[in-house]
Image 1: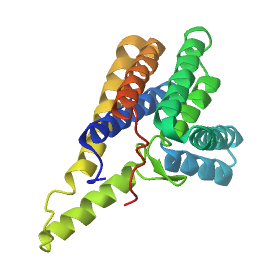
Image 2: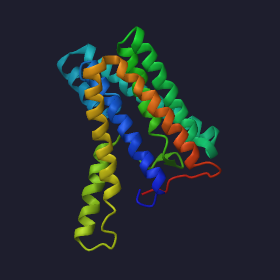
Image 3: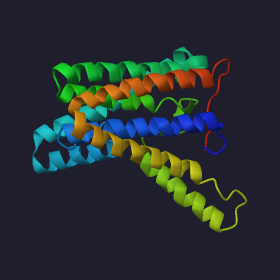
Image 4: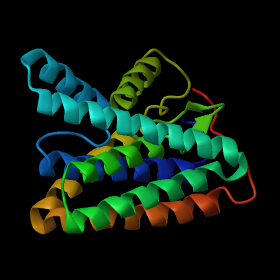
Length: 221
């Protein structure tokens, strides 16, 4: 990630903040399930199966499948239009979030959460190389592992002493999005969700400008 161009690092942090915002709305609105944190939903799935709570297991399993569907959608877009893949993927994210916000305004419920999970799965396809995600904007465990690894390298004398900073920024962005999402839900309820497609649209434009005329595929770490 440290070799990524600075504008795209900023965009990655903003995408992490968007994921945190959406995750907070999903968690606070629909009984402790997640839109982007699939480890949490996998735990809910396992606990539901282990305790006989079929409803929780079904919801968690559906969210995992919706997230995977979003990843598939992003991969199809990348294959169909590699030169404009980032913009195309973010456009799909924006549309999914817009559908979720519109549905939440008239019939809030589990279907909204499924759309949000699909949007977050799609969002992870923005940064990729050869079909592999290179910056996981919802994988905060991975970011924290990188922070620890890069800090350890710096303490052991590696010349690049600040390579951990971008990963910490990614985690901080996600956390800031969660805080804003929780506060927004307390104030506006489901209406706060309209902020998500608005932010996604702005980020789509930013990515389009940052990658215009270039096929910028992120280097693998």
